Length: 190
Figure 1: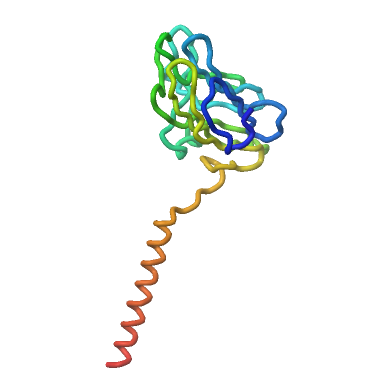
Figure 2 (figure 1 turned 135 degrees about the vertical axis):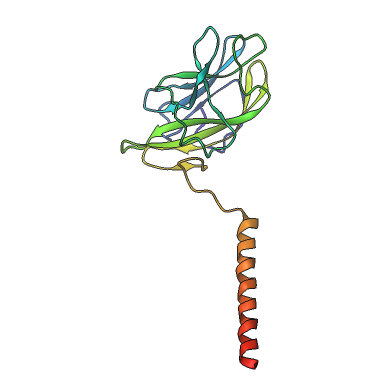
């Protein structure tokens, strides 16, 4: 059971305790059969997965869990599975139907109740590195009802500005101040 975003690694199955109560998992990633890896919204407590309604796995009818390239679009995503739903994250070489994320990484979006009738949003960053049964968890965000996300992500804690960008802004302000000081001195000397 993963209980903190500091817990990462390569797994054949992993359960995420997203609200920190340790009672059970809200999201489960699990290898299924001989070729499928599934993401589950496992508890029926209102946690749901971002699904792609236009693509389903042939013969199974499960929507594919949405693979985002960044976390920014997760909160505005329109297709969410019901609680206790599952979506196929990828298929192995023995699977049939449409696979996704094979040999690549992306963000699996999830939605959690915020305790006030709305939602908070989070993500699990996954890298699919074994075509049969293993997936690497690179990072993830925890979301508690009524709270934000530890680890950032859509609907969570705000990100920290990039140091280079903040430094350039301060440099520009300083240069403008120096120029203004020189202009004032020139005006007094004339």
